[in-house]
Length: 136
Image (tube, rainbow, N blue to C red; front, side, top):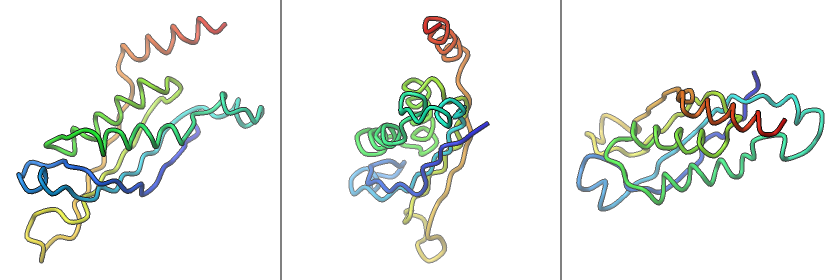
C-alpha cells in the first residue's frame, strides 16, 4: 500500500497535565504517515484521486492549535479520528508527536516523544463502503 507522509510539522499548543503547560503552551512537532491507495492518482494526475496533504495538514493544525488536551495520547487519537472522518481513503495512520521542552527535569530530558498507529473503526469502514457503493 502507498503512503503520504507529513514530517515534522510544528505547532504551538496548550496540551499537558501540568498547569504551566495549559497556561504557557509549548511547541509540538507532529509527523503523520497515512496509508492510502494512490494507484488511481498515479495514473490520472487528478487531485480528487488522492488525499490532499494540505487539507490533512489543516486537520492536524486544528487539533494541535485550537483544542486542548491533558494527554498527547488523546491529541494523537483526536487527530487520527479527524483524518479518518475527513479522508475515507486513508486505511491506517502512524502518528508521532513530540514535546520539545517537556516540564520534566530539563537537565535530563530535551524532548518527549509519542508514537502510535491507528486503523479506522468499524463504523468508519461502513461509511467508507457506503461511499464507495454510492459512487459506482
